[in-house]
Image (cartoon, rainbow, N blue to C red):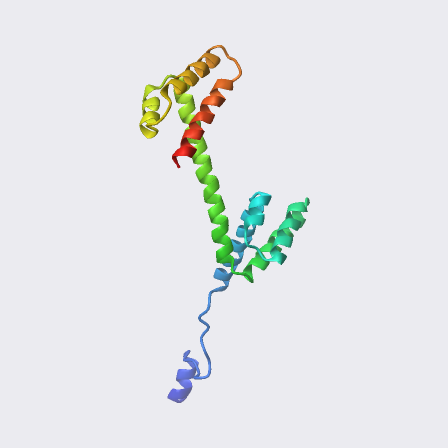
Length: 180
């Protein structure tokens, strides 16, 4: 054999061949799975939140159809179809809109839990929590909040319906909203 024949058989590429340098098949599969997951996140949103998204008509129709389907296999096919539609769109913009809505949910949940904890601590006569609230909201009506705390404490002591507890929670929520 000649050296030129040997070099061709040892793995050197011909000058006309090009090496594919795109994403791997596994990466393409991961990307498709991610878009199907994005479609599922869209389906978990409330109807008014879905309508607030800037979705093309075909995708809106596919989402509304998916929400109507009851069978598991039908839902799965529709989720895959939504993922397929997302591949042909600017899915990064849609994903950022969905993330904003989810962040809003997370923030509201955290705020709600903090307010519940404050209320429960106030009813249990936790002075540190009261001081924290007063320092956070300096213009608070101290007499009113103390009345609400006493009434809620009495309700809990006598095992009555938590009307004053709800009023205390509402008052704390109003303080939080007016601060922001």
